[in-house]
Amino acid sequence: MKHLLPALLLVFLIPTLISCSNSERNNPRDLSDHDQKIDSILWNSTFQDLDGNEISVQDLTGKVVMVDFWETWCGPCLQVFPALDSLQNEYPDDFVVVAVNLNNSDSVEDVVTFKQNNPYEFTFAVDNNNVGDEVITIGIPFKVFLDPQGYVIKSELGITGNDYEDIKEIIEQNKTS
Image (cartoon, rainbow, N blue to C red):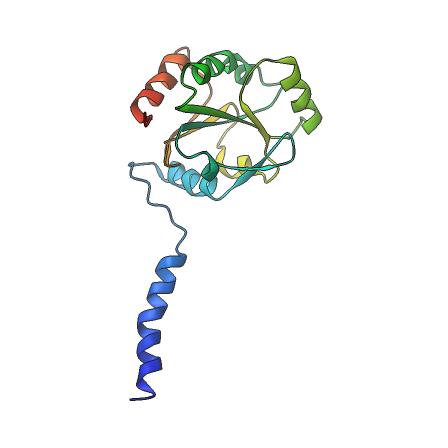
């Protein structure tokens, strides 16, 4: 019996340890395989803010979050910034924009200069861990919307003529207050 106890403990302990170490996320939405991958990658990734601090989407739970991958030369990226800023101001308790510069052709100084020259109140960050390389399929602007629990709602490439209304609808459907 003395030798049986450790064997029984292993039989019950190993499956428990394996299930606890499983990092798969269980998004409640019916997502494409690509969006499911994005969900897992973003949840486990960090960016760097313009002061050098680490930012994680895990730190932003409680609001609808839009992670917007962009660069300063990208006209379509910049075209939607005024609408995003308006929405963030309209929903200060429910919506936050994390403007993640891919840092491919821009330097951190370029992003700081852009921020200084533009009144947008986004959380500006740089993609110091190359997360964009893992989640962007074709190009930018590439947006990922997360619900207040940090789960991906959807991702999208480009902009549409109805960005303001489309994003407002996402906020309204997913806000907690």
